[in-house]
Length: 64
Image (cartoon, rainbow, N blue to C red; front, top):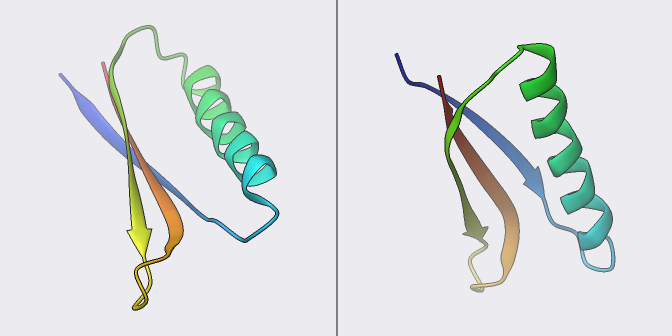
């Protein structure tokens, strides 16, 4: 059975690299902790503020 887990992070100016690294670590730790052997899909989508600027990122992981 395929399961889905959603992760998110805000993106602050001048801190994007660190925040993306932390998001990667969070996802990898989740995969390791839950002993996931098969990842079906990983998808990223950005969120925007009222001015159209990117303010966050949502990562969805589908796994078995």
